[in-house]
Each structure stands twice: as C-alpha cells, then as structure tokens.
Length: 93
Image (tube, helix red, strand yellow):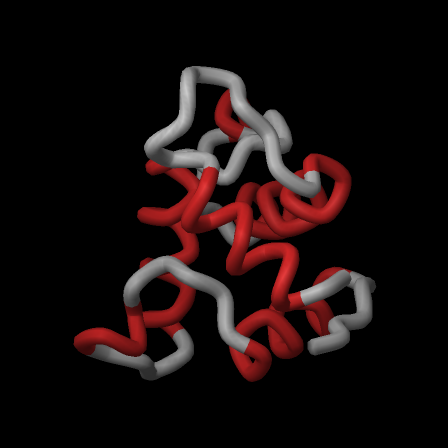
C-alpha cells in the first residue's frame, strides 16, 4: 500500500466523473478498513476515493487525535500505517 498512491487517489477521484478510480485495489483496502471502523457505509466501498471516503478518513484522523488541516481526509504515513496495522496491510511511502 503506497501513501503516494492514496494521496493521488484522494485528490484525483472526488472531482472526477462518478465512478472514476485511481489505484482501485489500494483504495478498496482502505475503504474496507473504514467500513470495519464504522466510518464508511459499505455501499461506498467501491475503489473510488470519493467524497464519502474523504469524509470517513477525516473522521478517522480526528479519532486518532488529529485536528484542523491534519484531519483533511487525505491519508498521511502515520494515520495510514496505524489503520494498516489494525487491518492487516502494510504501508510504504
């Protein structure tokens, strides 16, 4: 799982056409983890890092103690590594 890929998806998918996917497999892993955390409805775990995923990830960041610009829904190395440790995936820069 690449943080760079997730950041790209989080910035590319929301403004794109409905259903657009960037790094679908990696995004799907994160979305499934967000579903398991109770932050994302499973109907939105589709491999597109859309606005619902951004909102859910921001909620995760706040849960982890981040605030302000640090809780923007864009994955960072620390939050993504923590999520990965809890859900069985490893993270690379």
